[in-house]
Amino acid sequence: MRLTTLCYIEKEGSYLMMHRIKKQEDENAGKWIGIGGHMKEDESPEECIRREIMEETGLRVEDLKLRGILTFILPAWGNELSFLYTASTKEDVRKECREGVLKWIPIDAIGELSLWEGDRVFLPMLRERNELFSLKLVYDEEGHLQECLPMD
Image (tube, rainbow, N blue to C red; front, side):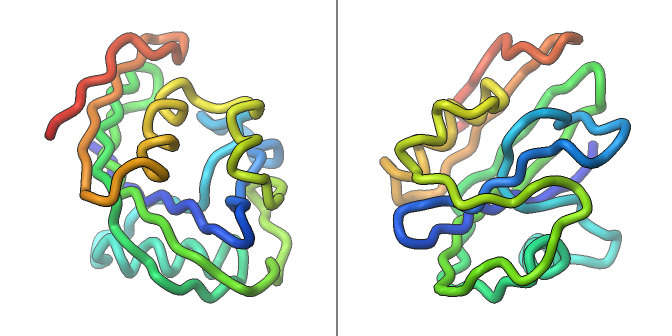
């Protein structure tokens, strides 16, 4: 199982989203996602997400907080355990990302984007809940959500 991190960075009522349109062989191709990536062997989740945020955006963030643990069952790509964070910043993006196009999207408009179906489940939970949560998201071979199981 792959270990990954994912962060939704907030600024002035918007999340920084990445439109994954630059990378070939991308399981997220065409989707809008938060900032994050794969953990290296010697990293903690917090070290990984801070490294990924810096590499992809050049941002320094405040209030980094672990919000959820997501178990993705993805037959086409391999299963993944992801540590879900939120953070805030007052800065603007300082670099171009080689994996996608970065854009600040008003939180109320994120539902209009091309998202993974499971993201539509956990993104509202970031606004509605303060406690740590855990979800198991089971997808089929075509990438359609089959089950969403809360683990708390």
